[in-house]
Length: 167
Image (cartoon, rainbow, N blue to C red; front, side, top):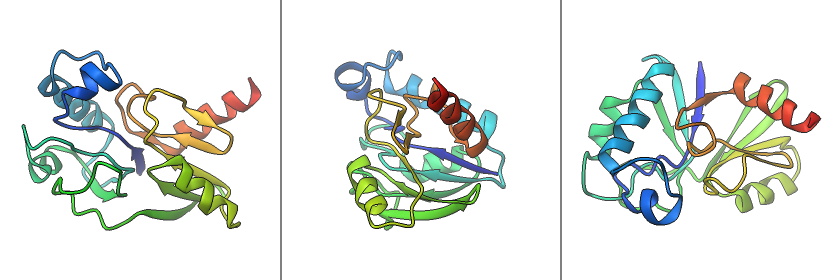
């Protein structure tokens, strides 16, 4: 099974109080909730695509410790906050094929627009925009702020996208 997620911002207390206003009292509580929700869906053999901004602060668990707490095999796409967070993120984007479509996975929507403009890309899964929007044209925000802090599988994504398109 393949899972998609973005913008966990592990250890980032300001994401709770200054930027997105997540419903947690502290970063430790947020970390626990995201890990529990992740593991409630993702099995040890599953593949998880993290589309950036995995961990921010050096406070709390390290990236290596977080990976050991999260089920699955992890593929990381570099986000704007993934500079020295220990996630070793060399990928800026990747392209997968699913449902007969080429889907680009990248952190920022503006990067997805560039890849899509080149042709051959049918849809994009992105992060970065947190609570701003879930769907935008052929872009889907897989960030935790849009999916109740859970990773999502492609069937769930496509079902929600089709419902949104019909609305």
